Image 1 (cartoon, rainbow, N blue to C red):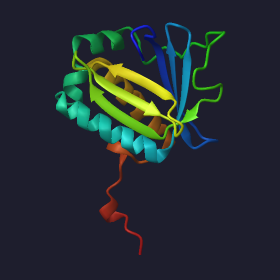
Image 2 (image 1 turned 180 degrees about the vertical axis):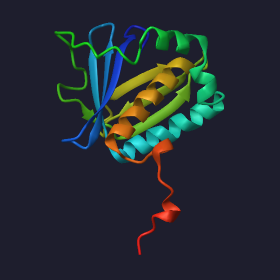
Image 3 (image 1 turned 90 degrees about the vertical axis):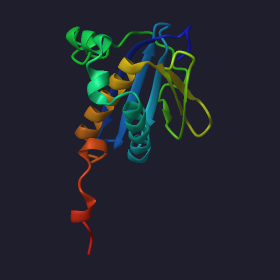
Image 4 (image 1 turned 45 degrees about the horizontal axis):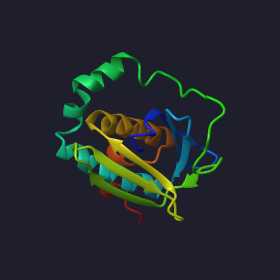
Length: 163
């Protein structure tokens, strides 16, 4: 999200009917971005976030930062996603299916995460350490609800070989 379109809320939820995770992001400008994540795409995103988190000292380091603990104390994970109307939907009312992913680092050392559809429409997140941790945590919760066995929920495949 650009400086003029700052992050207001973010939510991820597994939608059983679609067998996908819906990533909902609203901005302070009352835009809502809807992006559907498949299992395959979610694995790519987890791998990218895992590597980024390790470069930044690991989940314990990011989770114990002052800004992160402040958000937890303020109930960041307990607050429901607020349905504010009317909303503008730059990616369409039904959102887009995530297809491409690009990453980089901005001048402040924040992770620039670009999630795009096959047509190139998408959303750019500029994430500091706290927001990386928060998005990673939301993603892990959604993966657990989906029972997708990705990331830290992976099963040991060497013991589950098909014969």
